[in-house]
Image (cartoon, rainbow, N blue to C red; front, side, top):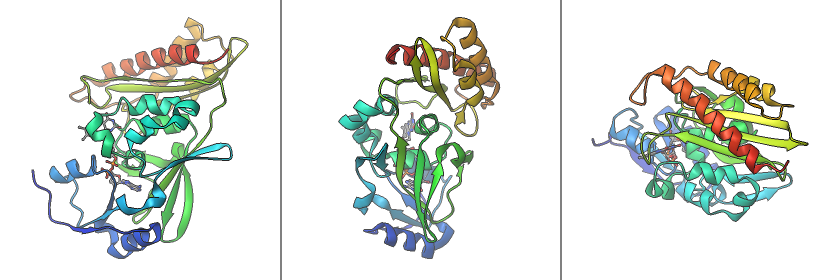
Length: 288
Ligand SMILES: Cc1cc2nc3c(=O)[nH]c(=O)nc-3n(C[C@H](O)[C@H](O)[C@H](O)COP(=O)(O)OP(=O)(O)OC[C@H]3O[C@@H](n4cnc5c(N)ncnc54)[C@H](O)[C@@H]3O)c2cc1C
């Protein structure tokens, strides 16, 4: 289908973008890679009167270290995430996850900022960001603020972003050297959104789990941080009985929709299967 008509704006600084969004009001939307927003506009599920293109904002590009954090500009594409040597060395789960998003065409234009700001429960990066204790740097007309990924998602396509605010960067505390991580995603075919997916980041000490964090994708209206499941695993050697208990705790917080990807009960079970696989692979990746 053809989208409704809209006016196109291309600011050249964050201040200009924020002022523009503030002036244009709630009928204006930022556009980044356009690979979620334009399909929504074509389906007439979104009909903004103004699109404010973030593509001209050089400040929103780049991946850098800042003290103990890694900061990724919101307009960094998924392709650039995959190609980053810094991320491959320090937070390899990001590359692994980005490679499971859509296809190369989408990843050349789709941005990390768009992926985390979109609020679609099918987006893969939000659960990974929750798992990594990431926060989002946000600019708006009343200044700058930070929001923890774990507090950001409030419902399907509903986040803590206020109208006129933009995510400028994603800030991730660098996981310790020797951590293990994995993202396991079940999809019906290459390029599909997850039927269910699980992210795990853990550290091991003396054969036991010293710390553990778990995120789940597309098994609720928001990405999920499976805090109780991670607590069950902490201190264990990831023996089969403890993993089974943790998986049951993770499954218990899911409430997926029944849709073309399968009935709710199946998707819940698949979240458990993905979590079991991600735990095993994260353990293999971790230094004991
Ligand atoms: C065929 C296909 C398959 C796909 N499969 C997957 C998949 O498997 N997994 C997955 O995670 N994604 C998938 N996607 C979505 C893709 O990853 C999108 O690129 C991503 O969701 C949005 O990023 P974008 O830069 O394209 O954002 P846009 O489409 O430009 O924007 C998306 C939304 O976020 C807002 N927004 C964008 N940037 C910002 C910002 N910096 N601050 C505030 N708001 C902002 C926009 O206003 C809009 O509401 C798929 C897309 C397609 C077309």
